[in-house]
Image 1 (cartoon, rainbow, N blue to C red):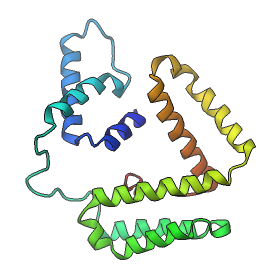
Image 2: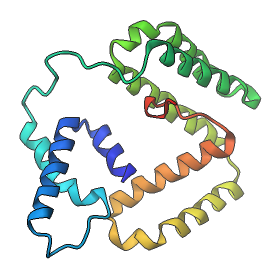
Image 3: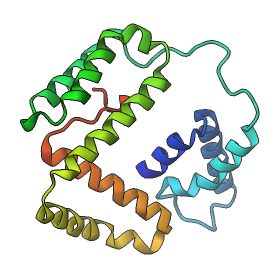
Image 4: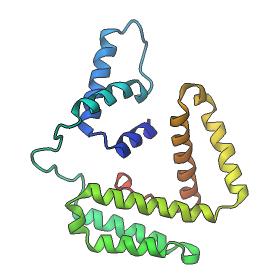
Amino acid sequence: DWALIEDWKNAGVPLEAVMRGIDRAFEKWRAGRSKIRSINSLAYCAQAVLEEAETMQGVDTRPSKPSAAPFELDELRAYLARNAQDLRKQAGGAYVEIAATLEALAAEAETQFEDLEDLERRLTVLEEKMIAIARTGQSEQDMLAARRSLDLELRPYRGKMSADQLARLERQYLDRRLLESLGLPRLSLFYMR
């Protein structure tokens, strides 16, 4: 489900299309209850969400007034500064450049606060760079252990997902496990605590 949500986010599917699609899928489910017992996954709603996104395409979906951010400016500054500090603590200094960029973003937080979508894109790029650096330092044994763990976790779902979904899920799993094993922070605003 998280992989599907991330795909919608990365594809630029408007939140309103996601909400409408989920509502429509559940309305359809309620109308035909006898056919299907229960819904166990967000994948049940995927087709309806994509149809809503196509319907909304070309329509200005921006809210008429800017919506309030789900956090305060000071929280954003602290989050960026904390991640920069965590990266500076890493051995070897491989992440110094990323930490410096995060510190600059924290210093410009007021400007960044005005366009959180652009900030999220920048943080995504920084996280991808951080993962690439971390992957170059990963040993063959660590990579093999991660792959074995991944195969065990995904075995029950392999027949139920498309190859594209499995590939995205595998990448996300391996990235998350790598970051956790090295004690590296997630940079996305979705991980703000």
